[in-house]
Length: 133
Length: 125
Image (cartoon, chains in turn red, cyan):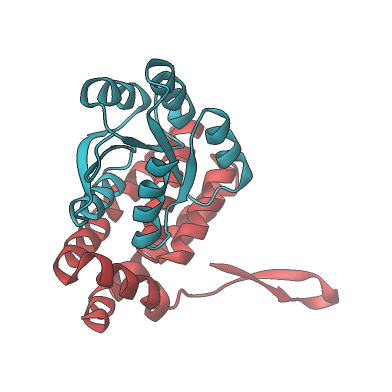
């Protein structure tokens, strides 16, 4: 994730900020999902979401490599929806950015940020499920 | 339309969203899943063959997306209730779907209770 930071001569520089693994999944969203779906179903659905992150990311990388702009936007849009559903807000925002950008020059950097965020989501999932139980 | 159980069809090209919506519908005593579709053509076919009370349509789907599906479904059955579902895309998505005949609009990431109530509310309109 890149964040603006004041640089020399007052010009903003982009600095890379490591994702915070403890907040990759919104605890409140998961509590609401747990209340409505129950522990077992939430664990099952969230597990499937996390399980498929790698293949979805690989699909987006392949679309960018093949300059398949529309496909990349559609894939980013789909992941944005799932991410929002499970409280992966930063991931949803990054996917929204990628959906808007498509296969632009900024896309490789966005995909790098998405890769880091996927890792944060993956790492925080067991803890978050534990907290909601 | 049934007095007690609402039959709901779901169309979304994202398998995870289909599974999520299936879980919500299965978990509610007043709703029954009529079927799942993954593009606009399948959605229209599902509506035609299963005659659900409500069709939930994702905005972005292959074969023309939710608007194309909504137009086709409502042309064949003007009484069917169509609910739009999408990520928080703001005005464009909602206008697109409402113009195509959707009765209401649900946002991915909304609490399950809101999604369920949105489906039931559309059936009452």
